[in-house]
Picture: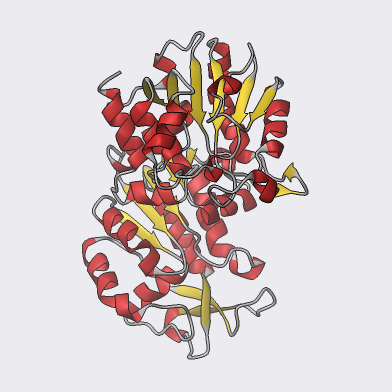
Length: 394
């Protein structure tokens, strides 16, 4: 991949504009969860250590473009600037009028500038050329480090890379691409993918792409019900997509997809629902399948233990409810115990990893939801593509 990396460039004295994903939850004027801010710290520190003048930009929430922050103050990056300053232990200046006055964005020595929310700028989402040139005018080097937004062709992720004097990938983005390529393009075999979620339709592209890559494919959540139906079993009132049964059968014909032998059912979807373990052949008309049973969980754990590469996206059951969390817990613990390479991505997957306290045992946890899924499907990520193009120029 012909992408220039930030580490390979001379940053001393340069204005370095870094696109991060600092879209964090804000509660009562403060950052409620700083995970994404912490993930960006190594890149910003690298710029500071190399003597650069770092300028950071990001989006936050979903503000209306072209509307002043005075009318949507809850979209201000001010809480992010405050938390970033605490973590970096240096001055972080929040800059609002950077497009009108580029000099105002330049930080002092050993300090950082954080630009106000890029999503309020007219033309941001449309990848407006004039706006992209405005961002490029702020810097000598543009660093794309926000994998979570790499699938969007926007002015702050894609357009700016076309017009900046130099454009490169930051350490966080480069690490993400390296991990994905290790699991998808040159994996150690056997390779296993675990794909969970509510509907086959939302992940059909992922399933079909992985079906061509992996040696085995575990399906979970509501997705598994469509495969159970395709295998000839009744799923009662469970979430199922009958219109995709033929696609499920086609996937089963070309890929080894284990079917559950037992499941956990209830007659309602609620935190207080009574859970009952049944053989898949015994599921009744009023049953809702909300997890795999203990026998299936043990079988899945054994499969996971025997592979060299694991790609995981999506829970196995309704793990938010304790009585339906057994399958996802078993999978999480098995992936953590696996001695090969494991990569996990997606909001629910990360939530499960956190819940079952296996974060430190997963080889790589992806920072991007939609970008992760699109990359797995083999789709072109605009922000990565433009870096490849610019990499040939640098």
